[in-house]
Amino acid sequence: MRYKLFLSDFDGTLVRGDGTISKENIEAIGEYRRRGGIFAVVTGRMVRSILPRLKELGLKEGLVVAYQGGTIADIATGTLLKADGFSPEQAAEAIRFLGDEHIHAYIDDELFVNRSDGFLKMYEKTCGVRGRREERLADFVLERGRPVAKVLVMIPPERRAALFERCKALGEGYTVTASAGFLVEILPAGVSKAQAVDFLAAHYGLSLGETAAIGDQLNDLPMIRRAGGGFAVANAEEEVRSAALIVASCEENGVKEALEIAMGD
Image (tube, rainbow, N blue to C red; front, side, top):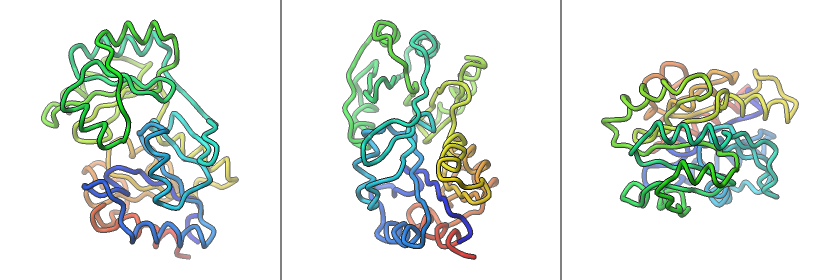
């Protein structure tokens, strides 16, 4: 087997545009695991959002990576092996910087938002979670006094590039990335999906050369570059495709194609 550990992004990579996962991808994951490979989902989603979807893949044990690499959980028990986050003060600073945008803050695997609108309804439907509205979100975060896994902004796609650049002004304590055409995500400095590659490889006693990763968005670039083998679905952003071996799109079973390569000698 060429790659013994395979890390896959979820939305836009393993999941099709209608929110479903193809039978072909599910069967390929099963075959990879039967041959001794370790398959892990690496997503920006909340833990409680991704866990129910893992059942569709036949994953009842092992590890799952959430919050862009900031959190790693045991699938069977929900135990957290890793949980990075902002201090309340850092998160509040980012929220205030963002002003009147549609903002999410994730605390103790719960979702808090500053407004209830069409963006929130779309997010809730896609991720299977409900958000609790806190109009004065920065103040709420400070009062709650708990670490914040990440801060997310939902924005019209035509505004994403400009907001992405503006958020870089937050400085060295923050990592700015994008996980969809309408999302900008702000994470603690150093948090990225590359951490998932390092953590899981060490956990399973493998070298980075024995790992592979696949994705579609800018947030996937760190793990694609860190892994021994990097794949991009055909629908990936140009910067991602230029850094990886391109396989079929998420609509045409790109994960299956990449797994077949991973299972080769």
